[in-house]
Length: 205
Image (cartoon, rainbow, N blue to C red; front, side):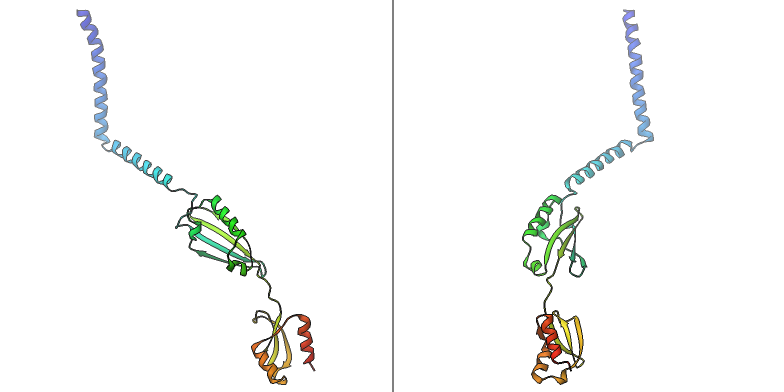
């Protein structure tokens, strides 16, 4: 019996000492680091929230907050115009692949406005959920012909846009008939270069 008690005490004392040590350590941590477990728990919650928010917003899809930049290139005069617009509704909620597919469809069926402007092609320059950059290339049809007009009392030859001077002459409008002067004031259309020089030669002394 004494032997059993001795064996029991042999195991009980170390176990009790171990438990006491654990409790003492916990009390020590609570005393000197009272917010340790609270901070760790808050940090875990914050990490979970960040992970959840990151998963809920896909970085590869356009939204109403996506910046839309359009660059228009005119290959006739080598000019370009870049401007920022609101993202068109038809491009909302698109991935890069779906947007490229939509642009390919537009390439085949552009709007009438773009056709009139000389539309050639459209392409995606860059893509992200925060910004997309699209470029359009145009080659406006060159307007043919010339206009004879009066400037400073003399006949001038203008390009078809009626804004760019092609040639100035020494032919005074006062030397022309009233009907021709009236026609020149409105702009007399000349189809080609041969007709132009034929007209000018007939009024050059």
